[in-house]
Length: 111
Figure 1 (spheres, rainbow, N blue to C red):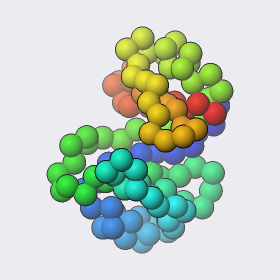
Figure 2: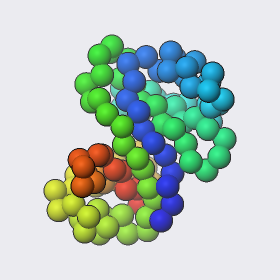
Figure 3: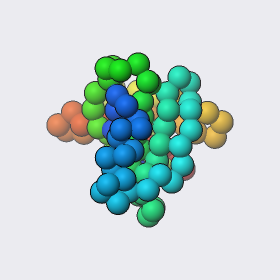
Figure 4: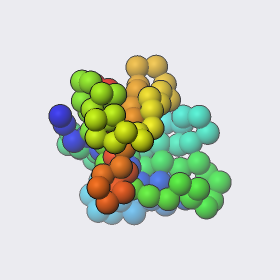
C-alpha cells in the first residue's frame, strides 16, 4: 500500500494555492471535474489535493488521507463495513471512503 495524497476542501482554490505555494508546494496538476476544481500540489510522490466547488462556503469541510491499494474495495469493506463506494469520478478512477477509529476520513483508491 502507498500513501498518495491528503485532501483539503477549500472555499477559494486560488487563495489556497497561493498560501501553500508560500510553503514551497508547487502545482503539479490542476483540472475541473463535475463542477469542482482540483489541484494537486507537491513535487514528490505524496501530494496535497485541494478541492473547491467555487460556491463560497465549504459544504464538505474536512480532511482525508488517500491511499492506493490493488483490491481497494475488499480492503475498504474489511476496514469499515459502512464504507462508501465505489465512487468513480472519471474513467479509470475508482475509490471508497472509510472512517478510521476516530472518524477521520480515509480514501482508498483502486491501484
